[in-house]
Amino acid sequence: MKKIIFFTLFAFSVTKLWSQDPFLFEEPKPVEDRNFRIPLIGELAPSFTAQSTNGEVRFPQDFGKSWKVLFSHPQDFTPVCTTEILELANLQSQFEKLGVKLVCVSTDQLSTHEQWKKAMESLVYKDRSNVKINFPLVADVDLSVSKKYGMIHAATNTTKDVRGVYIIDPDNIIQAIYFYPHQVGRNTDEIVRMITALEKTSSDKVLTPANWRAGEDVLVPTIPKADATQEELTSEGLYNLTWFMWYKNVQN
Image 1 (tube, rainbow, N blue to C red):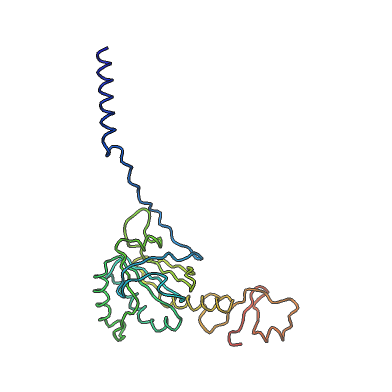
Image 2: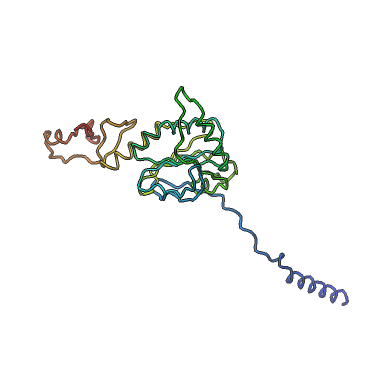
């Protein structure tokens, strides 16, 4: 009987102590959700505010009703990324003619970005003259931008896959997405071609065939009326390869 009373008193005392200890009943800290999904074509581009080599950037709001390219990097002073930024800088005037704003993101801190930018602007690349980098290099030290754009994988904390390109239209809707491995440099000419094609299809309501370049004929999304005369088709610059593939002469 004494043993029963002893254990009853002991259990009551321990319970009393637990109830008085706030740490024993502290809410568990939430585990970070590692499923950082990639925003898809047709979705609104995730917004962010961050520091850059051009000052504070609010993306995409600061870039207005223009096409935008968000170009991301895993780290500063990496050789592949350096060549990519130099190629983008070389195409700045072409992007400007297309009405495109460039924004680069890298996961290092702002002071490192500034040193990297200075080093790149001092290089003579492909026998070209030195080029000034006018677009911002955004600091993403806390990886918040990389996470919003789905570039941090669920199984790892590494930043090596922060290698995405997002092409965003004037309404801030994502229109194209590319991802590249860290060991292979991106094709900046293809980015220019894609934006040119997107602008063409958006303004003229047409389609572009494989490998299309500016100035080449385009495809039309609808088949002409069955009773359309050859004269009418010719006047509109329409011709076909087969019944379901109709082209439009852009020179028409």
